[in-house]
Image (cartoon, rainbow, N blue to C red; front, side, top):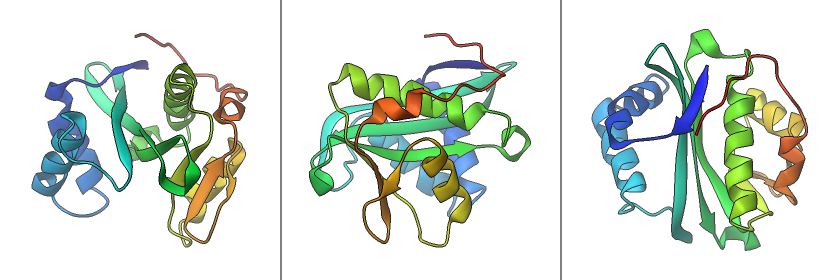
Length: 160
């Protein structure tokens, strides 16, 4: 698996991955393109943002996006993380999270929040495993995103 910054040419594949869970590829293409541009701004988002992708044999296996923010007095927000089903539970999501965490640290953004449906127990367990704590009913927070850098997986080959 290789990890790198997303390119405009990755948007179609990212939209396909998001649409597998809900909405349409067209909806997600517009949202992700706007986010990457940056022309689409989540509430209280600042312009600095990043998307990392995980690729295997030139095929997108997953991606993660985050930006700086002032929402909930946080420094940053994890916007999206998605991994295709055949690469779930293989360490891809953990490595994507580490890439985003490193980016936040470089931005001097340590308090990071993420919106998670209260019923999404798999995501909540994943974030808790990586050091996130409950902020409120819908939101989790890393009071120091460096805590997400401590766990290491086994299938990592990183670039960029």
